[in-house]
Length: 268
Ligand SMILES: [Zn+2]
Image (cartoon, rainbow, N blue to C red):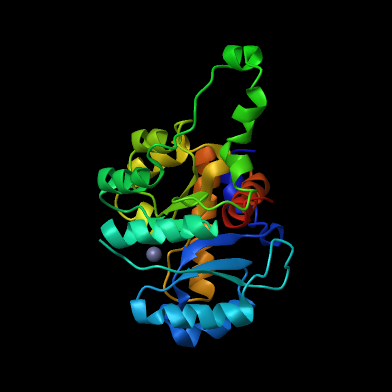
């Protein structure tokens, strides 16, 4: 069956769990009640206006996901605000101190953003050891212990967050390789939305989606109102990612769900 035919005929397997990696439902307070009826399982919610951060916290107190095993929670709060460089660095330091994942707007100024992020881990880059050298080195264990996937399990404060999501990522496929360099001590995820990524630069978005490894890609609506339209936007971006990656819908939904859990909790 061709992927196009499959896309037309096969309904999205919502029951496997679709997770919105970034959206702004607190922009439309009247829509918050609709979250309970949405097909999207969990929303990662962020305030657009600085004054709405309290609302995000309040809403998360009632409907927030408590931990990875929580089946009832519908939202995960994300705090922060659009900032020029100094405040962003302070926020990244705080996320590192608390060992929480951070979500960063990846829409523009990609060079400056990378530089700001890289400043937080400068001097702490991972040591790259070749396979041959690792076999020979008696301190191989020590090298393994500095692997970012192990570091995220520890209760350790760092000036950088253990996991990072560049949401609505609109940079080039080339910039992705900088973030994925083995020396970078952060697990970086790349999130895509139909609203931002397929509005005007679809070729660039397609190239970027192809360049991200399977386990680092996320889907988001980036929408300001909970409800059916947000579900539609999630369905659209999940289908787009699956088509571009040549994934079946069930494989794609499961992969994206597992990626979201690792981004939020550090494990599945
Ligand atoms: Zn947004």
